[in-house]
Length: 393
Image (cartoon, rainbow, N blue to C red; front, side, top):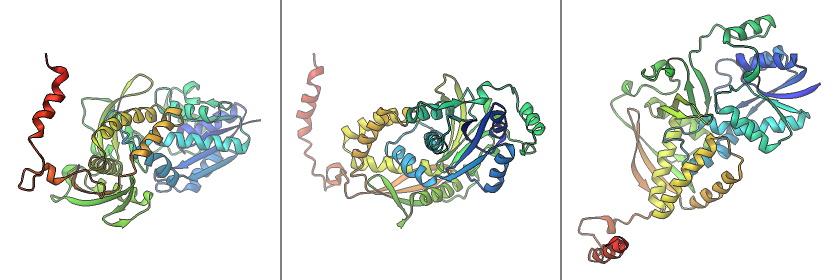
């Protein structure tokens, strides 16, 4: 019997997939990655594992990958200032190559010949998982049941689950499709598909409405060392704890919401809303610190690289040669990105209001219009003539 490693979420689709694959003659081994999506809050991990086994899985792997996720995937994207189409901080996109990595590793350990996932044929995640897995091991068969099976609706899946005694929760109404990890939450479907409608408050999970908060701001200070966030308000934190803390603080002040009509890789436009308090705060702080310590040419060129880096992540090319090469460039830009940024959180906004670094390129005596001014303005005339020379007729 051939073995297949299934990326398992514990939901209706992947629970049905277990039995569906088993009926096709596969031994199914499930893998669930904890990326900080709140596993164990609504139901414990033992219940999720029991569900998979009851559905027909022969074994279940559940791995806490939060530290690896934030250090090896989130941190490089933060250093690159990677934001897709100006709004999306890539939380889901960053998690998929890590999941693919462990699907392949477990396949090797279990001597499996295939991996499987529950992604639809309309989304980006199928591409991210399959391309990443193909780069890591092109010999593995990839099975995507949702793209080919006979079920046409959620109701048909529920009936299938009941027929085969698959223990699922069908009482909770889920009007939205949600993907969550420690770096952010992606929310789509339901009323969000109507572009004329404002996202309702019940669509948001970790951010408060900006209009509902106190009338006073919150000030925080984030300290970076070579591009890595190390401290909050002078207190040293591990990266995972720092992100969790900023999610809580930023979420309380309504920071990190975005409503986006994005261009999916498969060629369609989709509307999604995102919640990413910590990611938003750290992105703003990191950008502001780079503005202080990077010279103009490097800063402007890095903006170009940031755009391409975000596209590579979004398009599932995390393990590509170009992404690897860009990582080397980005790392070289971070050697002087050390210092503190003071931020003001207020009614959904995050604003940088203070900047400090021993590598600062800001010279007050050159910028000031006060009596301390040491800029020789007489030099400007000659500079302008030389600068404009190629364009004079």
